[in-house]
Image (cartoon, rainbow, N blue to C red; front, side):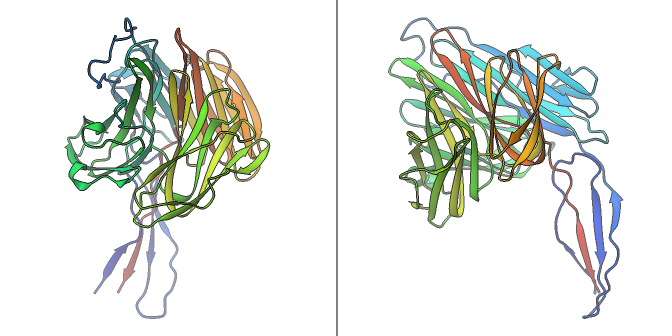
Length: 458
């Protein structure tokens, strides 16, 4: 009898030529190792799901404090390498480095046909408005689909709204389970949702219709097709809009979680770190702030216990230093994200996964990039305008923090490093009634195909 055991599978998205590694094992205890056999795989199309525009979801709040201003939207994309590329039905110009910039929001799909070299692509929609229910600045990235995603941020209290958009850009229908963790634990099963999202379609739900809580973290799990999740959040203060933001999927639960990009000096708003325990065991967490001045344990945030399914916000006020990476250490895997609150607006920073190559699409305003590395390394940071022209390219030392302010007219930033680093962006834009603020994460190349290992036992 011959038994075939699949030890690992192929990931859903491939960058370039993947392969198969096949090992043949003989019967009994005498096993002779055979050389690995590798076969050329087939590269697959790179796909990023782009979000729709925000919606006014809090009823008769618009215009109560005066005339509502018109929203201004810009969608921009950059593709480095690869073959044919398009944002929905709009083709990007041919070339090694291609950009797209146009007014409006383009919910749909950014696609790139891969060639031999790895492809790097990023896109986002910038939205800003001076007054009304949706006043503020938001940067909503196009993101790769996945079977599991985690969004740490937002609120469904009486003065807040959270619109969850589930986009399926794959060719297979998806069954999606939405789990909401709150300040008191995982929401009751009666308000959790399992929805079907057809191939090449999207589904939206207003989370406050089922869950009311100041602190939430959302887990999205899908079977069948993969899903890209966007959480579009906004708040009101009495009769005035109090900010908008997009919550970006962060890193998976881990015992060490890094949230880069917050300014602890207070010059760009106050900082709160949100920690969520998505597991079934209680978690004990300790938080430290890493800045150019060193590592500082956060007072009052050492050995904090989180019950299963709960979400906790902790103030980062009073810490030394400025641009930071916030580090969460826990005895079981947890999630984290950071809220930056300024007068009239706020932003959310997601936890990050370290990468040696990434890109981000930023607004033409002041964008602060924070890089963090566990070990000293260097990174090449290139800023480009909306036509793809290089504005500035510099090699910086990351030990353990490097902070860079982008040049004027920057639309895109690419980052290359010797070893994997974490990156976070805080963007600010002068509006008529406030300084808009938004957080953003970089986009990394989709993972290449994992090796498929077959053990054949006679």
